[in-house]
Image (cartoon, rainbow, N blue to C red; front, side, top):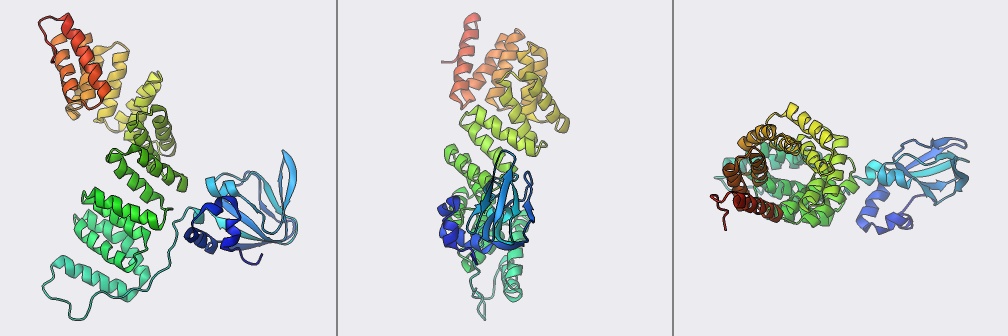
Length: 415
C-alpha cells in the first residue's frame, strides 16, 4: 500500500459513513512513519492519540489478557485513541521493517480545510467618493489583505471582527465578514464568525441561518454546533439544541461550555438526572464555574445531598457574595432544616438581587408561614401564582395560598 486513498478509508467502518469532502481532508492529513523490526510503536496504556494503518510490513498487538495478534498491510489499530482520546489497549511492536500511515487525533477533530479559491479584487479604480469613515476603513483593510495575501486575511478574519465587536461596531464587523464571505463562499469558518456577530446585533434568526449554512459546508466544527444550540435553546427548541451540544462534545470532548449548555438544555426539559450529569462533567474540567456550581447544587438537593449542596453554595458565595442562586439555595436548605429565620435572611438577600423571581417568592411564603406571618405569606404566594410561568410552580403556589387563606378567614385567595 503505497498511499492510503479515500477508497481505502471507506473500507474502514466509521470512515465509511463520512462525506466525500471529509474523507478527502482526512486522507490528506495522513503521515507516513517508518519503524525498524523490533521497534515499539506504542506501549499499552500510552496515549498516542493516533490511528495507524499498516502500509507495509507487519506489527503485533499484545496485551496480558489475550493472544498476540498480527496485522499486515491494510489492517489498522487505534480506533479508541482516535475517536475518544483513550489510552492504547495494546502494546504495538513492529515485527519487521514496517511503514505506517498515521492520522493524529488533532487532525480527526479539526475542521475540514477547504481549498482556497482565487479571489478577485472588489474595489475598482475610481471608487465613488463620499464614503463614510467606516467604509474607508473597510476599503483600506480590504486592499491591505489583497496586497499581503491569504495568510494575513485569515489572521485578520480571526481577530478583526472580535475587535470591532469590542469597540461597539458590530456593523463594521458584519460588513467585513460579508465581504470575505463573498470571496470565500465555501468557508464554513467565516460564516460561523458572521453568525457570532449577528448574535451580538440581536439578529438571532439570521445568525441561525448563518450557522446552519456553515454546518452544511462543514459539519465538523464543534463551536458552531455549540453556538447554534444556544440559539435553539433560547428559542424553546431544547431537543434540537441537545443534538447540537452533543455533537459539539463528540467532536471536541474538552469543550466545557458545551457540557454546561447541554446541562441547561436538559434542565429546560426537566431531565434533572441528565442535567446534573452534564453539569458535573463540566465542573470536573473547570470547578471555577460559579453559575454551573450553583445550578448543580440545586439539582443534588433533590437527591437529599444537603450537606454537599450547602458546601458548594457556600463556596460560590465565597467567590461572589451576591450570587442570587446560591443565596436562594442556602435559604431552601435552611427551610428544609426548619430554620425559617435563617432562611429568611438568605431569601431577603436573594430578593434584593432578583426581586421578580416567582420561585423565590414561593420559598419566601413558606418561610413566612413557618414564622407565623400568614398575611405576608399570602402576598408572597399570590405573587408567585400570578407571575410564575412554570405550571407546577403556579399550581403549588395556588394550593398553598388556598390552604393558608382557608385557615385565615379574613384573608381571601384570588380567583
